[in-house]
Length: 134
Image 1: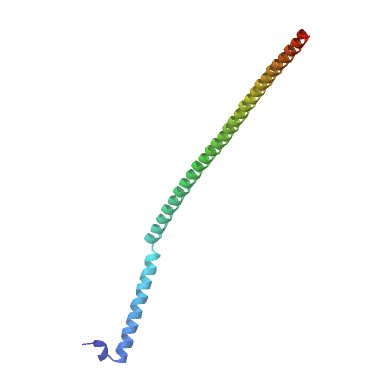
Image 2: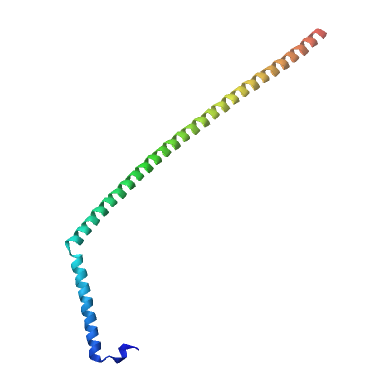
């Protein structure tokens, strides 16, 4: 059977007061345990551990940032070297093209001079034949 139905108002008040008293005792015990020297020492030890852990994490981050900075510097240097090499290659290609153009121009000029000389020789031969035939 349900016991709460057979209790009087005074019994219920008593039970509530005892529950409240027990709760206050538990809170007081918890507060005294939290303020005890052992708990204070435990918290200090935890704080020391936490500080050491934070220091290690900060050191790892600093190391990682330093490595990333070195890698970024190496990459930048490689990119600069690559750009310089590309520029030098382009310059060399342009010089080769210029030399080929100059060579082709010289060949064309020499060929034109040969043609002119052949034309002049034909003209002179024709003139000479005309003079002979006179």
